[in-house]
Image (cartoon, rainbow, N blue to C red; front, side):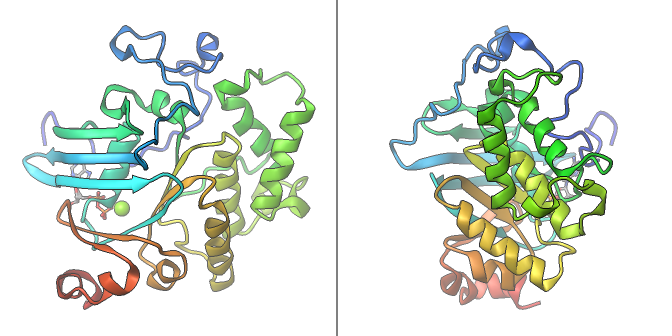
Length: 295
Ligand code: ADP
Ligand code: MG
């Protein structure tokens, strides 16, 4: 394993305010502008989706020690879609998210955000600021802060908001937080500590923290793991309500949940798309039954 990247989950919050990330020079809405090797200036909202696709991966290959976690992966996701990704353990689902978010560089292939933004040329921070948000499996809310304060921090971590951490929220920002609280059904819990929320509610808060930054694309890796049936059902409703306003890419093992929310389902196997289509098509595909559903 010498010289290979450590296989360890990222624990840093995608919008954590670390000293190295905070760059007031980028606060005006452009990202990656200060780095010569990332010459493109990406302005959120200027993602060109005139051809329909908001994410387009072609021939993406990622090797770890010669093992291909992704092997010539091709994927196209339309703007506003709710795409479900399923597949056995080790199929490459998380690695695919790592590539889209810039955590892992592909050895080969192209990854486009809209028509013009080549994500393989942007770093993780720039990709997040360009409008691709990711929710990790483990909730990382600040337990001692209130639900509202968690959302406030997330909003202020968004460089486009031009807010400083110490500045008071303006009316528009309060409205944005109130709207997110309503969406994630935590308005009643807004002024209590986040630590007192149930597991499911913490997951919703974390999704709300992403929504506060108004992402175009949301990547969600196993969002209902550990949730009660009731929380899972409410999460399905939440995702259906977000569809259209955002593009959602959801990796999940819970097939009942997938069944409730699915439009197009992509089945990954050995780093490659095995099948794609609506739930019925995919469920009846003998190759899918063989490698995944039949187990
Ligand atoms: P999934 O999310 O579909 O379960 P992953 O994308 O996590 O699959 O992993 C795909 C394969 O790549 C697995 O065999 C995993 O062990 C391997 N893998 C993922 N990341 C790394 C890494 N950083 N180093 C070595 N192997 C890795
Ligand atoms: Mg995974």
